[in-house]
Length: 437
Ligand SMILES: Cc1ncc(COP(=O)(O)O)c(C=O)c1O
Image 1 (tube, rainbow, N blue to C red):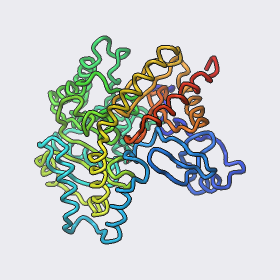
Image 2: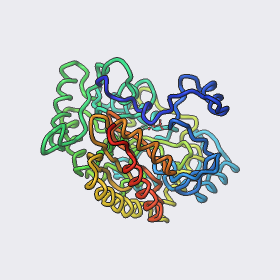
Image 3: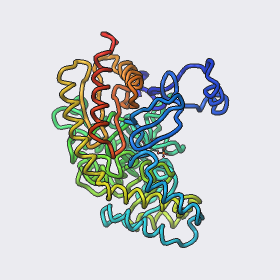
Image 4: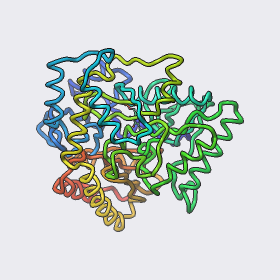
């Protein structure tokens, strides 16, 4: 990473002092240096319903950012399922409970049949940490390849493969980074260039004595700035990793559970079956549940050494939340809605971009969209836009190695009216940008 790269936690971050705000002062006193808040003036939220959030001062915000409450804030079906189960029984995973098995059977029905074992845990970080260990055991290698602004979570091992978290120091010696598949990085055929970069990085890891344990990739490269196309590039990348003896881990923590509008999983758009899939965030619509899904032999090999137990993973309340989320996605047709609303947004945003030199590119799939701003100060423009959108009661985020891309991830239940509200606010915020940034 160069000096200009931005840490993921710095993007759209509050950097001021509490001033007269008593709640902010308490927050800073309690969290200390680990406090991370959004916006120049952090928002105190009190309630969420569907696509909308209500702040303590009575302002309502359209949520175009939060990928956890993916079927809508406080969805009544999910809330009722959690409430009923927590009122009846919650217990660790070393006892039998039919809801846990029903959940895993329904989850597996959405995945390739080869991936028939699942381990449940509580966060995407735990899932990726376990996936790394499974891959190292299976390959007897220690090296990992990641994209250059990847974020995979917060454990020690996972931070080492998350360039977006590195604020100082270089790349760990067992890690190699590859640029996202763009024409700027690889020329006319970004998919082939990306796969070739993985082959080169694998050879380098082998020469350094680490070998390749896995190529791990967020299937929509969200922190790299949202890169969905061309469909199929991840299949070529997986082939390159496997040719070098490594596994392919699809990190579905961001794109999973229907967000891309092309089936349940981001990797399905690319037409390949990963060796390990990690899932989390929207899985419980706010209840902390995550997991690793893989082939039985890979898990069996790993368990020869240590086995795996997670106190809160696979508890019946988590299963109730997960099951209710799957039911809502199915019953409300949310994948089709993500495709329909996402396509409409993409084309409306491309129309706006065609008339504005402030926008460099519009990317994405379904309801996971990225708007890359143009110019050397694109990161500053992104910051201005997130604040200007907040002033118009719309919450969005930032992504990309230099924080140059606006990140959009509204709930999958987005309506046409919500989309229009967003587009109006976006066009106004763009028009209101200062002439030079
Ligand atoms: C792609 C990806 N993987 C993993 C994680 C880590 O998930 P968690 O914060 O639940 O540990 C994140 C979190 O933002 C993520 O974006």
